Image (tube, rainbow, N blue to C red):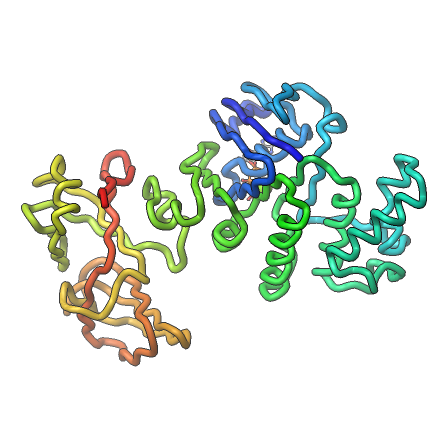
Length: 359
Ligand SMILES: Nc1ncnc2c1ncn2[C@@H]1O[C@H](COP(=O)(O)OP(=O)(O)OP(=O)(O)O)[C@@H](O)[C@H]1O
Ligand SMILES: [Mg+2]
């Protein structure tokens, strides 16, 4: 298994596009790291530099303490699973999974054992004699994973392996990847643009934007204490609401919104007295209450809770807001709801960085 150290990694493509800036991360043996961020933020580029499929322009990559910055892909002992898994259509599932070992001329008996073991882990035992065309999308994706498992690599790299699957299969296969990670105890780096995948899979998430790492932390850290407005709006669904407000004594005052600050919040905002900041409120941190009003534009029942959309103010002329209220609500269009805020996030308007509240 593998320990990794990515030190000041940068990628500048031949056309002078810099895709990754100063990427730093130490990965522990057996850790599942998820790189998440919007399209074009440099996730695949980073993964491909680790795999050795892309030159590292600057910086250093260590695997198990060994400098592999310039080592060819085949010497890194990594296996990569892509979004577009190409299985060999004329071969059986068994032959597809055995292929790389057959190429390596391993002992057929050993190959047989490894393929059966991988098939067992992936629930493919009954499919081994079939052809890929006889399998569902999810099963084919598992075969693609099986091909990398049989090689018993030090490190697994996944680049959006589930994005071709429908929502139901995606969540089932996600659970399989988690089980796989537990059973193999393998180090894995997993790339996705889907924040739900990141939250559900990762030991630690690396959130990226425009080539820069924005935050590294556990799923809970990124959800609970996002480092800046980018992370705050990227992680969580529906996304966090943001409002321009001013710090005035013990209050936050904005257009059609005024909130009282706790002692801890006041202490955190001391340097911002009389100044504008950005207030962030997650939809699930809003509850029916008595702090401010919103005029409802739509009410979506989700069973366990209700998404209530609208605009601040009884006249509905303020900023947009989405609340996720517990239980079943029946607001009508034009209703005025009174809302309280269970938890607030604060951001510096200039830097967009979070203003931390202690305790
Ligand atoms: N071979 C290349 N030559 C030049 N520029 C490239 C090359 N590959 C990627 N890029 C650019 O580098 C940036 C990062 O691309 P990358 O593929 O790493 O993004 P990504 O985060 O994986 O996005 P996606 O979610 O769409 O897969 C993009 O601006 C992209 O256009
Ligand atoms: Mg990509």
